Length: 351
Image 1: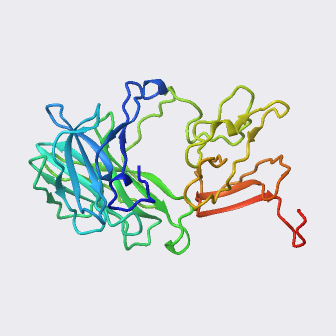
Image 2: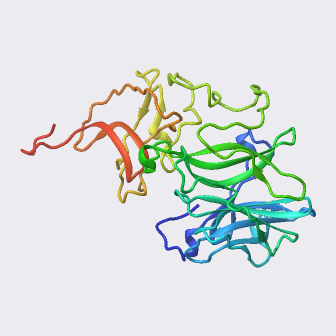
Image 3: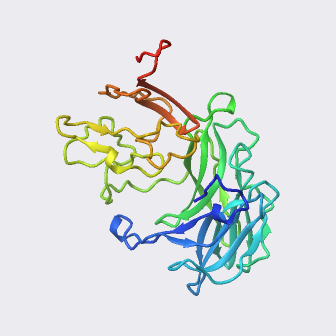
């Protein structure tokens, strides 16, 4: 977590935490947060052949450039040595998002560079020793759409994995372009692409990240996975908020919610969601934090570029500046909202 109101060189700005579980689908099996002392972000775990645990992470590039590694105890968060710089990347700003892979006797270190905007890219280096030195791939960057007019832009912060058949895939963050490649209405999304990785060689993308892509055949769909709610492609176009149900797990809040402000099917209002008012509106006290009383706000992520949306609002404001409505929300400083509010008239009466 980043406390972004604090200075870059303030060690309390950074709070890295790790969770673990023996069952992904059982909320009760997850551990409490284990805090790790690292003045940076984008930490990623790595285990060597002897079972030792390491964390590789990114220092704030304005303070200490580069990717650093240390051995840690993941059960306690204790750091077991000194942080070691592995690689500063190929020269793009903000080397970050590191992942280490061991394959065929090589350690591969893959990172993002260029910032998360239009110059975003993915680069890779390798070494025979975990602590380096790391030699970059001559074909870097191995993934980018910088300086193009492709539909997907800002591609980077990638990772690699193998499926059950042993085929390699990559995932990365990207945004879909809006008009003139300056607006991105969907925000950051995850894209999937196929990769080949021959023994002793570098991973290679088989097809770049484009608006239309092809790749390995996908495995058959497994529908008997545990978990709550519908699959993401099944939709949930008619939420009823029936009695004795819970708020759908894919609904999200802004900052930690005040749970008692959200009540499903209260007495006399079956099949509704009652939102109790909060002291602050969406902008809040500083455009960044909700204040001690929280902000009553619930939403779901936009998953289509074009869609229809409707909601029913039963609301009668009773105090000056009370407001309720709907918003297209990115942050407290960046959103559009339409609502019903009680505002003063020019003659100081209330409307």
